[in-house]
Every structure is written in C-alpha cells, then in structure tokens.
Image 1 (cartoon, rainbow, N blue to C red):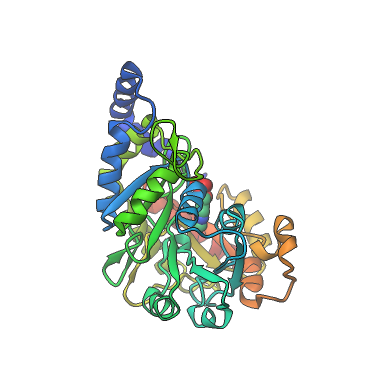
Image 2: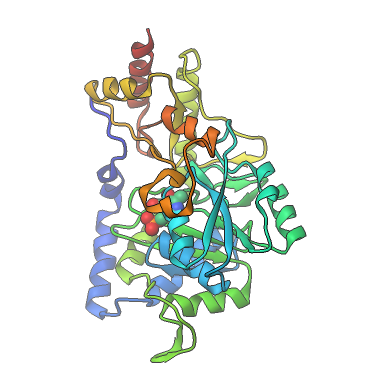
Length: 366
Ligand SMILES: Cc1ncc(COP(=O)(O)O)c(C=O)c1O
C-alpha cells in the first residue's frame, strides 16, 4: 500500500465540473481580480470564521504583513510570537521592519506558552502574534487579558486553523485581526496561492483593504504605502466551490485523528492532546517519536509519506541570525523539533490507510 501525505486529486474529482465551469465564466468575463467571486468569498469566509469583515489576499504571508502595516507596526516595534512555526510568521514581522521576539512553546500542545509572554513585553512591544499551529487554537483568554492590560494588539496566525474553535468561537474572530493561508494543502486550499484576513474592527478592515491594493481605495489615488496583495478571481472560484464542504472535511479530519489516536495508544509515541474547550481541525496530525528520523525512513520504505513541521526553529534559521538568538534559547521548541512527525492527514484518507500507517508505526517499535 502507498499512503500519500496529502492527496489533492481525491478532493478535486467531485468538484471538477463546477470548478472548471466557474473558471470558464471568469475567463469569459475577464474580470480577473477583486471581482464578484472575491467579494462573495469575503462575505462567506468571514461568516464561516465568525468575523464581521473579510479581505481576500494573495497569500497568508501577505495577510500577516497587511495586518501589521495597517496597525502601523514597523521599525523600532516588537511583536511577540513563537519560534516553533512556519518561517512566514516571523518573516512577515521582519518584512514590515519590526522585530520578532520569541517565546517558547507549551510542551504538551506545542503552541505559544502564554505564561511566558508578559516577561517579554517592553515599551517597544506593539502586538502579540499567536500561531494556531497544526489547527489547534492557542489559549486565547489569558493572552487577550495580557494584551488588554498592556494595550497591545493581537494578531492571530490562523494559516493552519480554518474552522478551529476556542471555547465555541472560531479562529479568526478571537483577536484584533487574523491571517489565513489558502496554500493548496491547507484545510481550505486554492489551486495556486491565496490568503485571507478576518477582523471585527470596521476601521481596521477599511485600512487593510487599501493596504492590500497599493494603499489605494480609488484607482491611482494612493493614500498609504501598501503592497500588491490582491486575491484573483480564479482562486476565489476554487475556494467558493470548496468552502461549503469545509466543515464536513474538518469533521472527517477529527474522525481520522481519533482513529489514529485509538490505534496508536499502546505504541510508545506521544499523541496530540486536545485541551478542554478547544476543537482542533487537524491541519496536521503530529506525533512525537523517539528515533524519529529512523521511523520516518522506515515508514517511507513501507510506502507511508510523512512530514516534519518544522525541522529547524525560526530562531535558528540562517535568515534570522541577525536577531542574535542561539541554540539553547528555547529548550522546549528545540527538543520538540527533533521528535515531531506529521502522519498522513487529509479528509479523504480512509480507515484502511490509517490502519496501515498505525500498523507500520507499531511495527517499527516492536
Ligand atoms: C503558520 C503559517 N503561517 C504563515 C503561512 C504563510 O502562508 P502562505 O504560504 O499562504 O504565504 C503558513 C503557510 O504556509 C503557515 O503555515
């Protein structure tokens, strides 16, 4: 048997006709950017995420940059985030000229250790940027309390958390603004690049809308320094065709996770935990394993494709050397990255495939 890490062809098949017809309509009309599909998606995905305003953008990295820019965060400012994330979280902060300040992660959830945030606040701190990594939400109540006490903005990196819930509220509606990615392998993925910003703040939404389009609200009138962050109509067609199925796909991912956890409970690996009050969407199903690299090689030989998200923490990346961090600064992050392994996870994965993966992991340790 072969089990792909993500199999997009299985998802595409039932939508093929709809998507191709929608793309054909866009090409007939030749309204290629910010047209009726983007506008409709902005309403539909904002509603899905429990937020009042939505802005379609070209990718998740741009979403975070646009939010930061619209909040006037730039040179001399600090943004508190985590090192255990995809590089884009910190990169967006650096790209607007601000400085990422990292805290370690919680050893059980691998998410921002909220208890460490307050000690990193300085007079230069402008915002906190929690990352809902793997589709699990950060413990937002205490974080929002710290932010409000210090007058800081909170930007959710919800790039892996479409539909994830925290105490019954959706990721994307919990902070001042949130960035989503529609990278093709995300729970909701474009066939190319795409991203989204959600917020409940009307004034900020209007400003972000301008920043997305070269700081312009009226053609060739540029009120702010912005960027080219527009979402295109073809991707909006794809995303709108998929969105009505996202809740069911997330439910299936949770069922897949439950089956993995049931089958692996007697295997000597650490399984993902679900904190009370949080409803994850398992963008990734991540175990922690001794002899992780050997296990990954063994699984590959068995036809099971896995991933490591992510092997090098951001504070130890070459591009971030200028920040001055060193090995040993974030012990939990540094340990976790040597042990994590993402098993195949997507909605269309079937029970036989999950059993085969679990049996293969068991076989490695027996
Ligand atoms: C946690 C996180 N932040 C930011 C991004 C950036 O999104 P994009 O690749 O759409 O620019 C991603 C996705 O790749 C991500 O997983």
